[in-house]
Image (cartoon, rainbow, N blue to C red; front, side, top):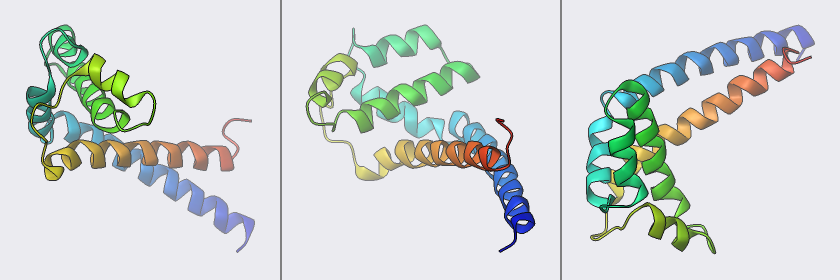
Length: 131
């Protein structure tokens, strides 16, 4: 592959990742937010971080995004050996096991958004945007 072809491919990948990432963030704070609220409702114990985040950030677009981040952190980071139990005890409690399908509604879109963001910045780095 020639250098010009790789540069064009990186530019296309960067633009596509930016577009898909923005659409995904929009979907997470609108359509997918019902599932995030359900997870939050099930695990947000009064007086813990998830409950406080709901009252502090509210229900606007930025507040919804922050609540998605908090719920994602609870679902994913509580399984890290060593610090996971501390994170779980500080953020909330899972009284009843959450169904996997409900967890995936939070984990998959957010993880995809993080991967798209990484690819966007990596393609920019490849094209020399940070020189």
